[in-house]
Length: 161
Image 1 (cartoon, rainbow, N blue to C red):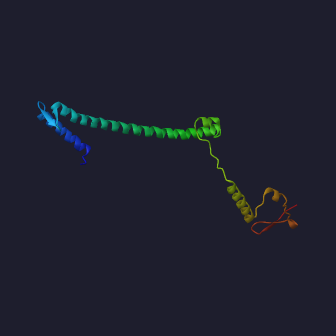
Image 2: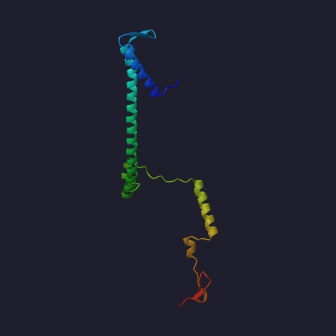
Image 3: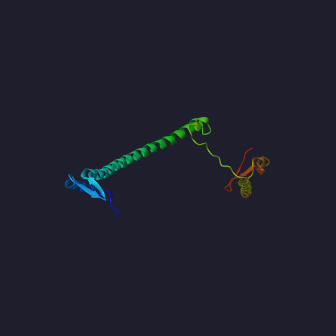
């Protein structure tokens, strides 16, 4: 039988009242054991007292949890701001940065295969775009014939010497 906490507490209060009414001066045998009214009252009162203590502890724990979450939120925000401040002031590779416990910046480590693919892709891109490096550009010199310069829109203008 599933009984809610409030139902059990209501039941225990009723039992306490009845014990006080009927067993204050008498004893009763329950499960083969003789009990006085005082011992019976103690059993049910203890159940009610522990339930009340549990409610208070839960409320206190809930309050403490909310307070801790709020404090942790403030600490997280301050951590991020302090991390950025130390990174700007001392640098991410500095001893000070590491002493605060901030993680060092991780650099991606490419495999040899990835590097080879990047070189191939770069060469293909340069060929497709007809681009040249500084050494290839150094050997190319343009000369205008008859001093005419042709603009990108097809119009020409004279260059004065």
